[in-house]
Length: 234
Image (tube, rainbow, N blue to C red; front, top):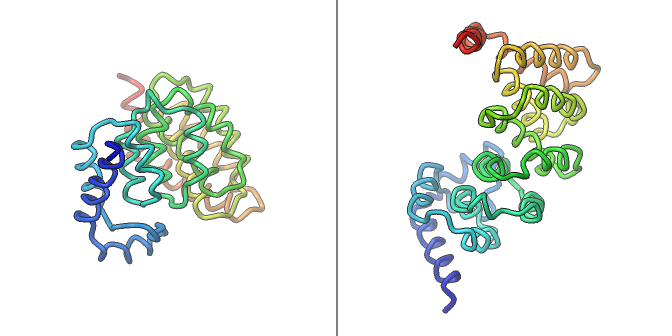
């Protein structure tokens, strides 16, 4: 028997064993696609990922099962050094749930050399979860990519402005997420994000105003401003 198939079967058996079907109703309430899900929690997914380790070929095979829990696991067991742009496009086209989208973008795609080019490639895509992927990646880079200059994030604010009128729930929430994370990166970008949000707030667009209100609510919090001020004097 093929070793990869044996390993896929073993992982699926473990996911099935550790899953909890009683979780599915709650997951569905939060907008998660549970059509092919065993109900594993993220802690159990992460625990299994530590056992499995980085295995690119296994991740590709697990992804092809279409099992929700297996695809979450792929975010942690695939090797970002072996991920190709073509794989990123293929997986993004398969995204059908916001949690898989965000976990893969934050824990795998963000670590590849292609993250920035995919933000540009995906931010205008029509598919809801592909477009979400662009802004999930942007939000993740705002938190983790310490070497990306402020000027790059300033240019990405234009992508936020261009997508802010999209009223689809999983797009507007990701656009909002990206705006908030840019604004929490440092004081200079905080000011730029505030200006961007104020511009969105003035639009005759319900999703743009929602994005702006929510972002401004967080970015004006005293504890956020205090943290950024403290960071600026280190």
